[in-house]
Figure 1 (tube, rainbow, N blue to C red):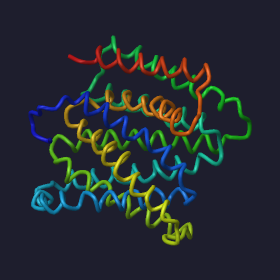
Figure 2 (spheres, rainbow, N blue to C red; figure 1 turned 90 degrees about the horizontal axis):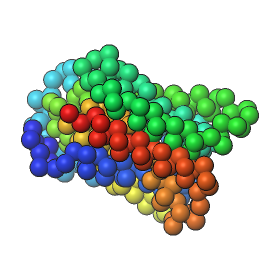
Figure 3 (cartoon, rainbow, N blue to C red; figure 1 turned 135 degrees about the vertical axis):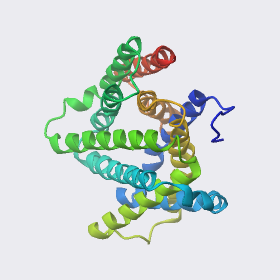
Figure 4 (cartoon, helix red, strand yellow; figure 1 turned 180 degrees about the horizontal axis):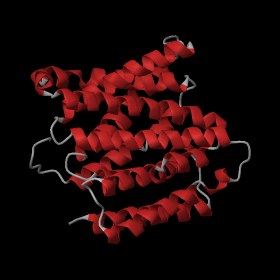
Length: 289
């Protein structure tokens, strides 16, 4: 699925990837394990699931240039820091506020694109603003909570890290196969999370059977069927398109929470969700050449 010319529609694969990552918050709520442990085991299980692919393509690792190898490791660092900052923000601020601030990444990615060679078409930019306005409505209630400055800063830092993750992927993916790139990124991120958990004194074992099922589900759905599909799309689509499209994650998560968690969205959430979907859809149409 990673040829120079693909029979798969990159926009469809991207939509499936965004849907996949939308299960992350729902699954994470099903375990009481420390957040950094959740992220660590999630990536360890992901590497185990990808190991047959890595063994099959093991010769490709030798063809990766030093530059692409280092950029892949940097992408893993960004992913690790995203997990650390994002999970650390949740106990210190509201979920809605954290969701809003962690989704500032399109501002960074689109701006970097303008400074480089991936300029988004001018007629598409206002619709990216519409999607961001929808995210602001989704997080409006959280912004009114006092005493959450630290949590808000951490969530924003998580957004900056995911921006770096997308930008590094866009640089590497045109030259490195998806299996090779995924293993390099996920394994380096897992190694860094190992260090974070050791420093924090988090226990690696002693969790319930249901917790281990959650760790495995996080690997299979939001990581392999989410992040990996998005990373695949980075070979064919600009990073700005990927970043703006990823704003659909909190909208899909809100929809999934209705049947799975019996959480009914309020009027502001509904209005924000509609703006996000409208903004993403028209942004993609306008940004296509």
